[in-house]
Length: 599
Image 1 (cartoon, rainbow, N blue to C red):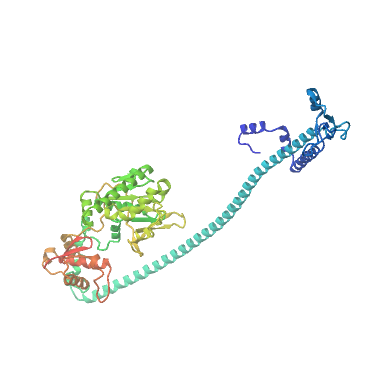
Image 2: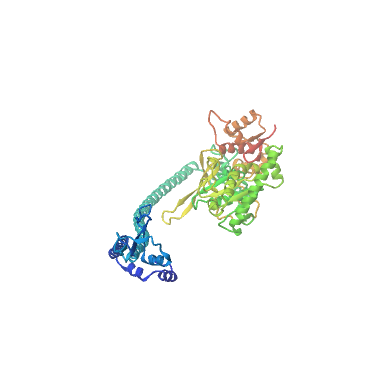
């Protein structure tokens, strides 16, 4: 038997007899023989104790007045007693009518046939008790052995499973190593071929350029044959001032090569890009959204970028991040212990429910209510980092379930949008909420795409993501904002990259026009000249004036504007809108919105 401690062993042995200690040391076959002998003794003793009488008996009769002997009672049982009680009766005064039964024994005395009957009974009890004791001891040991055998079987099965898994992993590792080696070899071969092709292209291009230069020199020499050096200089000057069909507007060859026209220093900031590849991030500022993806995909960096935009928009930003500290979130409210995070969730729920009740009891429209919240400075944005782990450390499952359902459905119109950062887009990862079928699949989502280095096997961001808009099933490919370092200081209201597409005023547009369409001339020289629109920009302007629009939002009329049945993207229409603004026919008043000038 296995003992838990020395004290356990001492107590067990103190309550165990020497006979059982000896019996416990016997092998199983000898134990069976001992139990059989004990049972034989018990049965034999019980049989011996069962038969015969253990004491002498005196049988007697009662003489009736008719001189008749009555030797039995009404139940036909003979009158009898032991010699001891017969003598005691005689001393107490036995009636004379009592006489010994002459028909039984010697003068009514019958000797005991089994005087050792009590001893046989005790022997039977002892034999049965000993056999039961030994059987109980064997049963206890058998139970312990069964437990150990079960553990041994499970151990052997676990070892076999681990061995099989180890063999499978080894096979997979060999295959993976072979694949990586093959891919490396293919990449090396492809790189060598690319280098050879590039070398050939460079050599061919160089030969072509040399030939063209020689031909140009020969043509120029032929054209200027017989001219003096002064005549050649005047001819070259005339070529530079000459307009060519390859230049636009009032551009000249001299204007295109004039070094004074180049933008240097801080002036290069006035040329804003017409196409903004990260303008889609604005959708994440005022809406409740989910940012998810594998490790290294750029979820946290995108969330920090969005927080800058939220703070710039005027939100009070609250960050719940159990995996960092306040030094990572300077300039915003941040909470990091699970007690603080749970309390902030309770505060958020209490405020959201209060706003819902107040709005439901009021007579204000939704727009008026939201304007009131902004005017009172109550616009709040909640950021839930590592939301996948909330259900593991916050034990109040009812609180998380209620928080998830209300925050994902009722927060936007109460100016309390929530941004959730998780590893997956399942309801289990979002606070373990249940019910509300397809709640997560209908919300605004961003999946950050990660790639794995084939050599180091470390994940890293690809710089791309997929966006699914609210209540849409289509995933769109987008670019992630480019950042050289993680944002941890949010003290500045307007970060360097937080406003990638600011509104362009009229002076800036005039400067762009001068640089792009009026090279070599002053702004004042062409200020009064009409600025021409491209064909599509002219058609767009005619459409806006025909539909009597004063303010035009690209998101509103995009679906209705088409030419010959062809529809256009938002970026194409924005480019033509820039032309309309540059021609002085409209002004920017918001992102994607222009106001037409009254004629």
